[in-house]
Length: 411
Image (cartoon, rainbow, N blue to C red; front, side, top):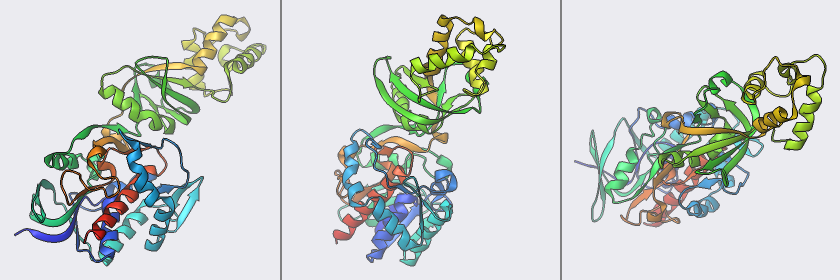
């Protein structure tokens, strides 16, 4: 016999637990079904285990998708201030750093623990290690067929996450359930991820961290698709770090569509080309120094060696003998190194999924499916993703709140 509940939430991650608490506080009988051995596994890993759970800074273009405006209603209804207040009620004291909000404990486990404790306090039943394989809409209820049992609910929230971190629970299984209901899926690609580059010299640069500006070009070198600046991490496969993460979803989508993808890297974004040329000429005039020695203290030594080599300058060449043509080439390498992007660093290393259930088929004011009444979809399952900095978790809280409130108001 099927287990009956008013509200059944598939997925015990950030958005699922948040929605469960809000519904249960209003006396809804809530069941959370999680296919991993415990709830909140992916949440435990966020922010390097520190859980940057929202951000006070409003950055234009921070949310992405086929229709980024879809997220506006939820984000304005339940934004950062409401999220901070919500978690304070649960016991999480906020700590701010440049707009980024963390639990004062500095532990993501604190957030997971208070969500689980609060859910159980309000009577939420949690079943782990159960996988829902089929969803069947009925006249007055919806049937969920699991591996262990069947479950029937008046309202169902799909909060299964995206397709990154399968070992933490986000394995794309929610897309299968959404498809069974007739929903279209915008092809998922990894986002907030490093990019693999064609050039072999990256193996020599592995471990280098340096401030840089990274610009993304697709199909041509005329129009910048996305650009960001910050600490660039050079790896044996290519480039990583926050500025790369911020542009990666556009690169991933283009690679999926078999388009040509390039990045242009400016290793000295705080100085224009003429200023840099003047500085290098001055340094190369220093007596008794090789080209390599003349660059000491300007950029990371590993990076200097590669940039000089790519400019056709011998590392041991007398700096005084380097001509203006070679200096021009060096300046161009520093300000405009071009790399061909061949792939991302894979779903298993990504922080979030770009793509998911098409928001055209979801009500922005309730998160309810426009195709099947009584089914709601929230969080990363939908085609909404965001930049680094707590914005993706904020989307989880916002979409969960809107769905839960719609369910509470439907009685």
